[in-house]
Image (cartoon, rainbow, N blue to C red; front, side, top):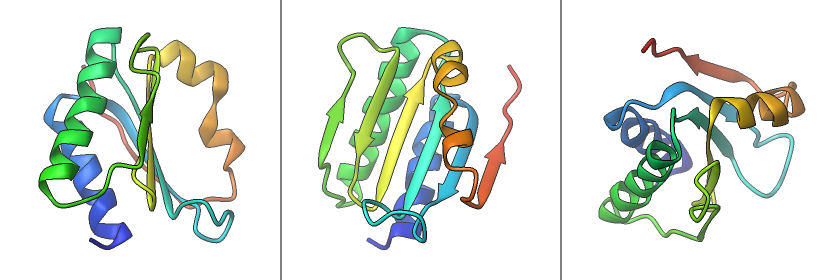
Length: 116
């Protein structure tokens, strides 16, 4: 699975469970650890966990290897590591506080605003 295909599958999995403010960052030229970062918000710990779990399930079904997942215990910020794509699913307040988009300002962004 190419990194681009993987990124699209991640976005589709997030949209399935109504993630908000999905942002994809192309970080290929900025770091050697991954090609893309996908950042999304969930409105509750339950939704954050469900979004991350759906990403894992859908990507496994598509044949992708899941390198790791962290933060599922609390559900405030769950990170899913797919190697070529790293997914951050967060509560809006946590996302605003850490502001990952700002940390990677040189990365080309694609933002999907989903109103609720």
